[in-house]
Structure formats: structure tokens, C-alpha cells
Length: 412
Image 1 (spheres, rainbow, N blue to C red):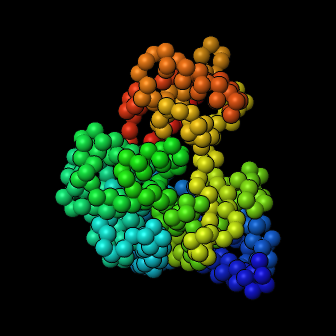
Image 2 (cartoon, helix red, strand yellow; image 1 turned 60 degrees about the horizontal axis):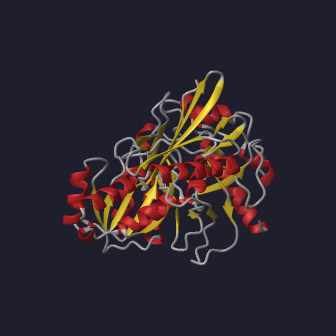
Image 3 (cartoon, rainbow, N blue to C red; image 1 turned 180 degrees about the vertical axis):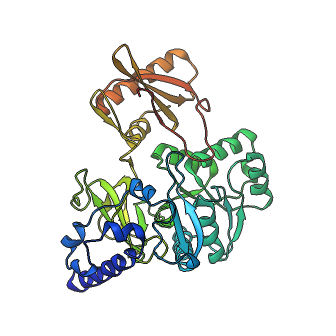
């Protein structure tokens, strides 16, 4: 950092800490910390992390750093287990989020002439309303479908001539397969798709792009930090630009130290303007790396690479560390293997057994055996253990309207 940028950074962090301490959660967590204690970047990196487990302890409104009369909306994380994380928003938070989301649409080349078809969920989940806020601020026609009812989705998509799809990668794939199955592709007018909420591999990306006939953009976000829309890829497909005038991000190692530029680690975010629920050094558990250098698109905003997985998605089998991202990469390099797979891990007779189900268009049993052998060998060489590879027909594995579960660990 230059002296000027470092001074601005310290001022922003001091202001963020001062505001955060207005919440019961940070008043306790930072009881012995004053904003003026932070005079260098090293001082900032000594601050304790926040984690989702901590936020659950603040339930219901222990995160709120403003009086209740300033809270205009509540959202909650999409997790289905444990105490929910409640995130309060002020009117300014909602406005800031809409501005960031509008930038995402603009980065993807969406204009007010487009018709935005929104399939992510509404309610306490941030996804659907976030896509809607940005599209309306942009001035585009907004079609707030929400998830499910694929028959109606496709009818409205055709009748209203939707040009932009917003979805999870799982539901985008389901829609693409249904369009192909019904033979209605010539009646679909989609040009672009903004995909978020879960990580997805290159093979799945190519399938969705080809079957829907669209340009794809990765959009990033999480409920604790506004929601989706805090970053997006550009047309050059070389990482996601992050709106760092609203937050600061770091990438840390397993031991909590900031990694060297360009190295893979866990993304940590500090909000700079969030009023309702400010967060300092919040561990997202998303694994990525900073993309170095300037982007060809000319945007000044820094980039992170497409997510490779989550630190809490990692499983160990016979000493080998397995991330969904590594399995995606493996399958992407094997011909006649589709993007969809499922891993089952069982403990039988004192041994861990990993079964990898994958889809293939090949029907001949002999040819399937050869592909299974290729997958087993590739898995062994890439990840370090040999699975039981099982080929199934395309479409046989479950599809989801939300996020698709890939790994099922039945050992516990």
C-alpha cells in the first residue's frame, strides 16, 4: 500500500470498529480494543476473527449496531441446522446492496432493455430479493419467479421473452436439461445468466452455457455480508471483481495468517459501511485466491478466483483431503463424463469406502467399465486414493432447485 492508501485504510478500519462496538456482540468481543489501537495493517491483522458460530450466539439481534427503529429488514443465512444467523439491515444497507447489485448487472452487460428472470428463493434468504433490487435499480424488467414450478418457469420465460437468467448452477442445469428435453430451445430468448450461491466446475459451466446458449457470469455473496452481489466476473472470465469500496477482504491460511499474494486460502471479509450488522474479519470459509494484476476489462476493482470449495466442505478419507473443486477438475478432464457426480463415503468392516457416482451418455456396459477405470485411475493420481467409480445415465443423479449436495459422509 502507498502511504495515502494505508492512511485511508486505517481510517476506514477505525471507523468500522467504532461503529461495530455499538452492537452487543462486538462491545463484548472488542471490550479491550479501541479503534485508535489500529495504527498499521499489522495491528489490524491481530484482531480476532468472527465466525458463524459466534454470530449464532448473538441470536436474535445481538449483532445490531443501530436502534431497532432504524432496522427496516431482517434476513437470515440459508443453513438448515443449528440456531439461525439473523442479519438486520438499515435503509442505507438496502440501498448500498442495490447499488452493488446494479454494478453486477452492468459488469455483465445487462441493460434496462433486458428482462431479468429471477429463480432464487425469496423470504429470509437474501438471493431472490437481492437480484430484484439490482435489476429494478438498473431499470430492467424484473420477473420475480422464485424457485420451483419448472413448467411455469419455462412458460413465463418463453411468453415474456426473458433475456437474463439468475439462478443457482444446479437449477440452471435443471432448466437447461428441461428445455432440451422438451425441444423448446428455439422459443427461449436468454442471452446471459448470472449464476451464484454454490461453487460449480468448468464442465458444468460449459454444459449450461451451451445448452442455454448464454454468456455466463459468476456472482458472489453471502447473507452475512449483504447477500449475493458483492462481486461478479466480467466478460474476460478471469476471476470475480469485488466491490471493495464497501468492504475489505483478506485471504488467510489454515493457521489464520494472511497468505502471500496469489496463494489459495480462506476468504475473510470486513465491512466498511454496513450499519445494521457490521462484521470485522468475518471468516466466510470460502476457499479462493487473489487474482493478481490488472484485468483486461479495465475495472479498478480487485479480483478473487472462482471458488474452489469451502474449508468446511473438506473431508478426509484414508488420509487424503477431498474438496468438491478437485473432483470437478478431475472429471472435467475425462471425455464422455458429464458434470454431475455424487460421492458416498461409508465405513464398512473397519475400512473407509468411497464410491463416486458420475453421469455419462455412454450406454454400452463394456465402454462404461473402461470409463469407470479411467475415473478410478485419475482419482488415484490426482487425489491419492482409489474410489469405487460407478457410471450412471445422464439425468439419473438428483437435480436441485437450490444447491446440489455432492458429498455424503455416512461414517458418523
